[in-house]
Image 1: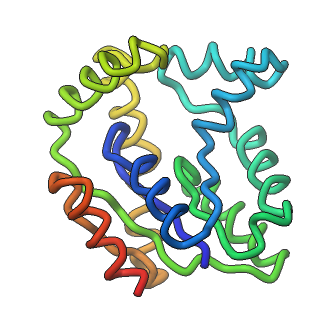
Image 2 (image 1 turned 180 degrees about the vertical axis):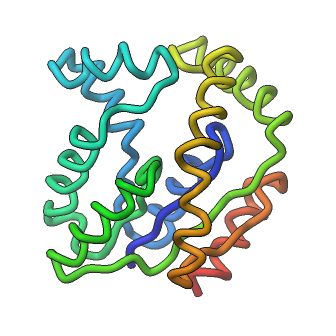
Length: 188
């Protein structure tokens, strides 16, 4: 089973992906986590990505597509994956479709976690306080930029996947448990 989780920055995609990993045995492929690991390791990719992420901009398609393509081939992904933070543009969605098709795979579900954007600022501030500001992108200015980028580049993916008949929406303003229950009902 291959699933994409969509939502504005701070909507809870990562939290819900972790729950799906534990409950369904799928592998979470979080481009954000993969990039942060590269940053922490000080790799060339990580250093390039850090500057881009700190500005609130998107990392280039070639970097992300290549990273996902390589990772999805690993043995632990054989049962399926949860894509978190990818694709972010229609071009990436097309690249993902082609990549999956070439591997004999397909997307089973695309789930949008819909949230009130005003509430996202409180979520980001809480996450920054809880983690001691461990993520350099957890601040209001970066969130404003990330929301603008989300609306310009990523939101157009919703009709793209709706047209394909795989898009479902859940109310992300509910509790974490309730959002998880909504997702479980969709996945069956």
